[in-house]
Image (cartoon, rainbow, N blue to C red):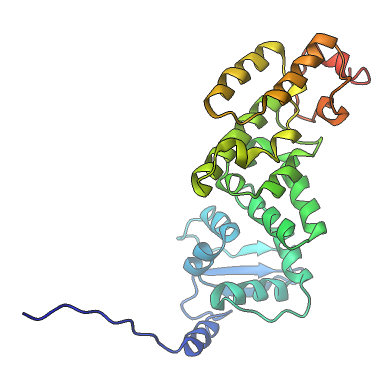
Length: 273
């Protein structure tokens, strides 16, 4: 009886890459066209490759049905930048004379769905300017961003960066809920308890902004996963007992841009009306 067998056949990777490179800006078999830059230079590309290699392009192309043949206008992007990005997406390599080309492209094409991915890259590679740009975007669309897959995949350091902002357009109750979901996903992926995953992030949550009834609800939820240390909850209750923010880090009593007003807030920060 003949035994079944299998073998891996590896082709020439260099030849494969070279073949893909011939598709860059090639009108043959192209099914999407861009008008790029002030001069609206025509750039040809392939919808399938762009969509599966880049979330930003996926979102952009999803907004235009495939049967529509009208060019997509990218007047704010330089042609050489777009071509460099396309080369990388097609061949997984590109020679850049200046890293700022890709950074500027990322900044110009940010979307709710991929801003967290861009922020993660900025934090990981020390791109301070891109990090600030991503954070400003998140501050304006916080409620939408925290519900994306990208937010759930952020590192602890990246989440800390977001939570340190005073300008997030979201109420603290919703922000805590989003962080809890992030911690549970991290717990499942890392095989680590929720409280361990969230221990460096929780101190940035502004529990003192919650009303007594909201703190009570939070304590009940916390019994299930122990995400928030008892000491942090005690500090929040102290603000209600003392009717002031003394004894709690001042930043944890400061309202964010999206914080909904509660009666006790006037005791925490008299400068806020």
